[in-house]
Structures are given as structure tokens and as C-alpha cells.
Image (cartoon, rainbow, N blue to C red; front, side, top):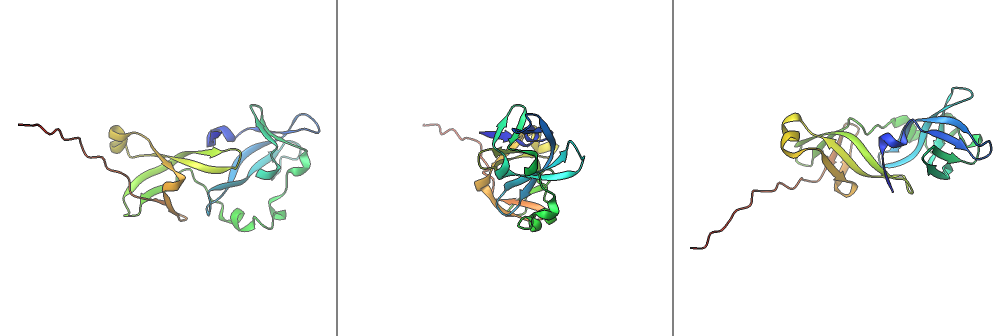
Length: 171
């Protein structure tokens, strides 16, 4: 099931052990190499400290929030040695410039859809310039169309430019 990025944020982290919320999701931790959400930064309800919830510790996603076994699955970022490089990148997808391989500006990412079972980002939604958005609207880009991700840009394959239909008149 696909979920928009905004529906994953500001949600509660619910502990099965105590049956109530133990944290609130603040922002995703995105791996730019494969567009996978490795986890989420969360604010602990008790200490107000920013902790990390890894995606593999999420048991279920319910309307009330993310379900986890216990408060103990929340970890300090400094303790996550394998994710240190990704955490240091502090990669954000929203607002990232999207261009084609021929350097044509397409727009900026304003949202994305994530497959919650695997936590892979499947679609990017790109806000185009005012002039282009009047004629074409918002652009949806599938992950298969992404060619490269750099610190400043997301480079996609060429867009299909549809030429107007031409009617052939038989004489």
C-alpha cells in the first residue's frame, strides 16, 4: 500500500507493551542510494530527546500510528554505526530540484509515495513552474524513471513530449 510522505509524519509511535504512545515521528531517514526509508527521527514522549526508529522495528501501521513492541526499540543516532554514513548525509527529498539527463529543469519534489511494507519510495510528485503547471499540472515520476540522485538534483530520463495529433484527410 502506498502512503504519501505527509501521512507518515507527525504520527504516534505506539508501544504494544504499555498500550500507548511513546514517541512522535518527526522526519524520515532516506537512503539516497536506493530511495529507501531506513527509519524515522522521533521525539521521545518521556525525555523529549530525538531518537531513531528503524523501519524493521515497525510491526504495523495503523490509523493511530506506527506500532512497535516496546519503547526500547527507539535508539540514539550515535549508536547506529551501520547507518552513520546515511545519517551524516541528512538527505531530504522534499524541495530537491528535478532535471532530465539533458539538464532540462522539470521542477521540485513536493511529495513522494512510499510502499509501507518495504519502505521503498515508489513515486515522486514534482511541482512544476507556474507556466508549465498551467499547461501540464503536477508531474508524477516513478522510481524506474530516476537515472541518478546527486546532493543537489534528481536526474531523470527524458520526458515524453507528446506532439499534437495530426488528422490525415483522404482526398
